[in-house]
Amino acid sequence: MKKVIEADLFPRKTNAGFSWPSSVGGSAMKETRRILIVDNDPNTTHLVKVLLERTSDYLVLEENDATKAHQSALNFRPDLILLDIVMPETDGGELAARIQADPELHNTPIIFLTALVTRAEAASGLNIQGHPFLAKPVSIPELINAIEQHLPARATSHVSLPKERPRSDT
Image 1 (cartoon, rainbow, N blue to C red):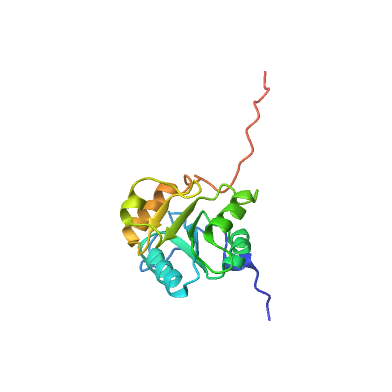
Image 2: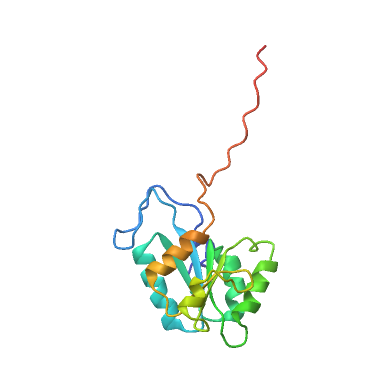
């Protein structure tokens, strides 16, 4: 039996010969963005995963155990993390601090999802630990808008070409 490696499950580079089915959204011309959602409620994470993958060009990984979320982020290398605040054992604030302290993940944007605030508080522009947040239950269009606002700019290419040296023909 072949051992499955995370790289097999979560390839970082796009394959020009592959395109997502139209039901999933996206095309071969778009880069699929990677979203990690961490919430102890598997129904919530699964619903958000399905809706995001069907309506936008995202690959979503669900993590329902906050104690494993940091390692999941290291393995998956998300472009953005959606993080619940209130979870057993490790809360979202503690997890966000660990992610921010990790040199490999510290530039990864985090958006908190929480039932602890009202929609008005979420819309006020305040941050929690310097991170934006959305009030639960969140609408998918609102979530996509927040994701797109906080995703890093898309790279034009995954391949770094060496700089061309000046020619000394003279």
